[in-house]
Length: 197
View 1 (cartoon, one colour):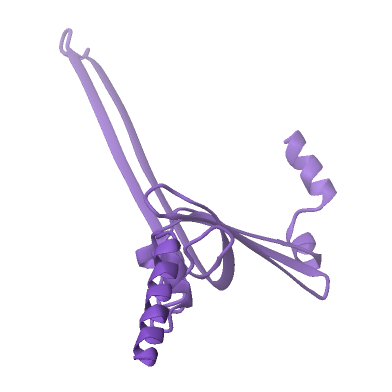
View 2: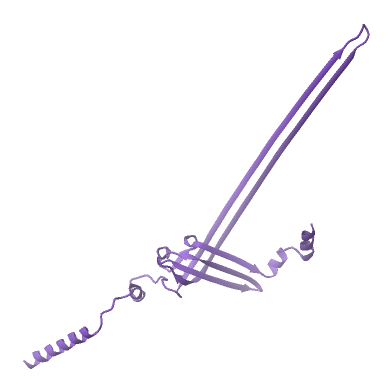
């Protein structure tokens, strides 16, 4: 009897303790971060997401124009007076013009890189505003890659990466500076002559 009474008292105390704790809703995102069975994807401000930059652009434009014009004007007159006299007058006038024009442009570009961006903010619909940059300096040659845009959570893969072509309002900027950039650019005299002429 005493053992049953003690166990009943302990059970009542446990129920009273549970009732005293206020009930609160659970945040599914918090739980998913601690879950062993869910993917670790970026979903909050300050978290990072890996951007796989795979961009290939090909553009071409061909144009051809041909025009031709030709005008001919002929005038002739003949007059004879007497047995031996005669007058012949002839006028021929001709004009012509021709024009041919053609043009062709072609542009190709390819960028492949991997960069990690931070989540700056989360929009009302759950989309993530990301922004990231990477600066690499090798032998005084500097290359900077900047990327920004909006990512849908459904486009983020299981390894917390997203392809650049799935980023809306994407801005991908690649800049370089160093000896190679200086050699490729025109000199001061060439720039001055371009200003004059």
